[in-house]
Image (cartoon, rainbow, N blue to C red; front, side, top):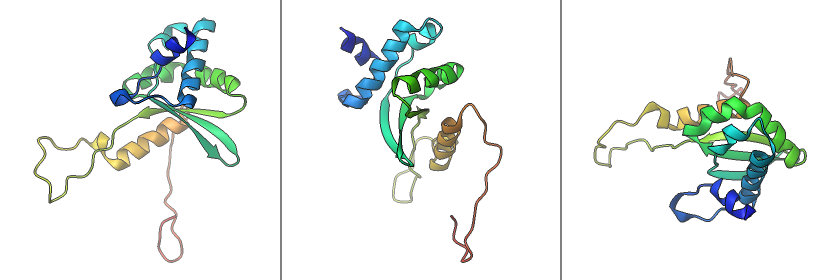
Length: 154
């Protein structure tokens, strides 16, 4: 019964099966929805598309991907949601990132696309946006490009 609710919390494309870790994250979201009164309404429409466990300087971090359309909903409750999920995953860092699409640059060999590629689908724009998601709720105010003595970028 519980696994059925958890399965509704994760939506994979093209009938792909969720991995066990993704099911754990979905289950944690279900438990939160059931037990937490202040997050219940927002969590009802929230679902995830993927979840990964990443090594960050010796500790593990949980990266949760939500659909881009739901990112605004997530941002409203992100601080509380992350705090609760970090309790559930015992000391692991939890970050929530919007699932975005990168479209390839139209090359000379391809036939002309029907539409121009939107700026939000470029590699650079997607990477910038992921960085913004990563540090939310703080904002990035400046970036530096560091160069080595030989002129190569770091």
